[in-house]
Amino acid sequence: MAASPVASSRLALAVVGAHLTGQPLNHQLTELGATLRMRATTAPRYRLVALATEPPKPGLLRVSEVMPAIECEVWWLPLEQVGQFLSKVSAPLAIGQLELSTGEWVHGFLCEHHATIGARDITGFGSWLRYRESLTSERG
Image (cartoon, rainbow, N blue to C red):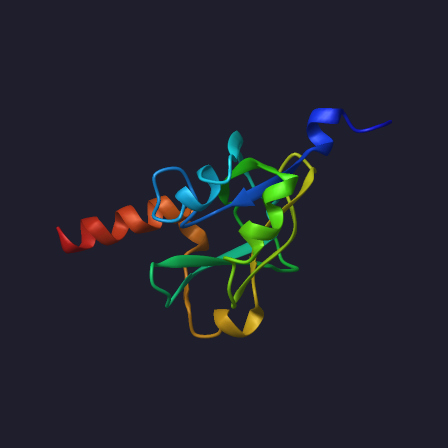
């Protein structure tokens, strides 16, 4: 089955942290003409950790054991803007393939394994936003 002309002119990109709607790096998507396709969850095969970055970001790592699904957003990024967007992605983050709970594979943010060693495992929160909210309540 051939891809639709609309789908072939843009890249589905999953985000789990600082690029989510309302978060500090979301503008990197919207300024390039990206539009929100859907809210989703990952397949239950990922671990989420809090990285020591500024601004704060999570790292998503595919693992062999079953884990809770992680909330994400899938954005449509115009293909002609992909290179410009990729130039803003720095280690330990990378763009690779990730699986959604629907079985669909999309491009998305993943993390190099070395950066997850010693990082706080926040998988149990199920989302970056719930983890960040918990920090506010801890301080409150």
